[in-house]
Amino acid sequence: MVFWTVTALIASAAAFLLAMILIRAREQSEPAAAYDLRVYRQQLREVEKDLARGVIQQNDAERIRTEISRRILAADTQLQQARNGASQPSGLSRTMAAVTALVIVGGTLGLYWHLGAPGYGDLGLRDRIRLAAERAESRPSQAAAEAEMPAMGKPQVDESYLQLVEQLRQTAGSRPDDAQGQALLAQHEANLGNFSAAYAAKSRQIDLLGPQATARDYTELAELRIMAAGGYVSPEAERDLQQALSLDPTHGPARYYWGLMLGQLGRPDLAYREWAATLRDGPAGAPWVEGIQAQIEDMAYRAGVQYQPITPGGSNAAPLPGPSAEDMEAAGELSSEERQEMIRGMVSRLSDRLATEGGSAEEWARLIGALSVLGDSARARAIYDEAKMVFASDSEALTLLQTTARQAGVAE
Image (cartoon, rainbow, N blue to C red):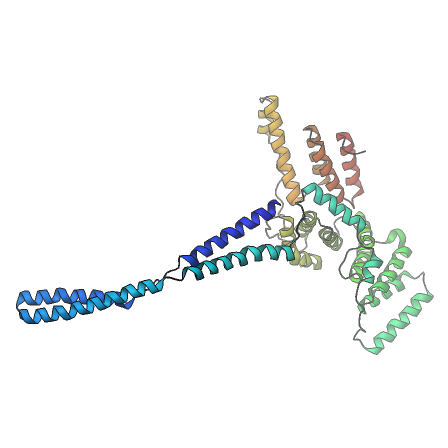
């Protein structure tokens, strides 16, 4: 209700200003009769000067005065008529003002009713995190997402290539334990746009490789699933990315798709941090770096972050704010209330730093513990829930966070 009231007041104020302009409008240009009037009066003064110098006779002066006076009266009459005619009809002006107000106020509210979300309440950070978690749990599966995809047309390739791929399918089918054959089949099925068949072959290859499967293998499997779903990161693709990042937390392509998934789940803040960190690690010119550069500014806007260009492979991270030696020495001389306020300031700076640029699991754990010491258990629990999403693919980080949260009394 507050939103509707504020919107109506702003629209009414704009309508009022335009209405006043319509009602008080006047002709701004000077009528021609006003100029003529000044000329005739100047001529009268010139007549008096000529008479004083003896240039003209008294009789001639009287005759000229009479003629000029007649013209002055005529010009004055025209001027009065022009001034009266410049005023807009009162009824028409008021009608136009009312129509303008109706269009502005009614149009504003009607446009929002059509394009906006009437009745949709404001969402705090905790509610947004909760909704993102619910969305992650209830989002469509890989099969459901693929079912929504339109049918693909026949690929425009040489008939000979199609025959070679068909032979490869038969060979791979007759040798299901050949990991290299499955890898080739996945590659060529992807070339033809058969992404479902491609990720099926890639999944079979990973099963055959077992522990020898690399982060690249799992990322390629996730990428094929994502392409089959039209860019959507399904729960199945998420599990592949988790496996890739558990094997190599620095794997650039997996980090790119992980950030993409976080953005789709309604957590652009986490997505921006992941992409920003990936850009800093580089290297410049890598395909995933170029993909991030093309989208990170929009992600930063969605996250409410003022984006500053990040140099790939460069060190753009600001040092973590914390107490200096002088701060620690001064803290010993403070009262308990002053020390508490000092701790709150440090916690606030750490929280802002992690919210905008991210940080290590140790820093997140430090923040959880500090909030618990300050008695802010609700916020500590919210930070713990968020940290679990940030480090979902890092088992060691999750163990550290869980231990800290238990000590802080915010986890079971």
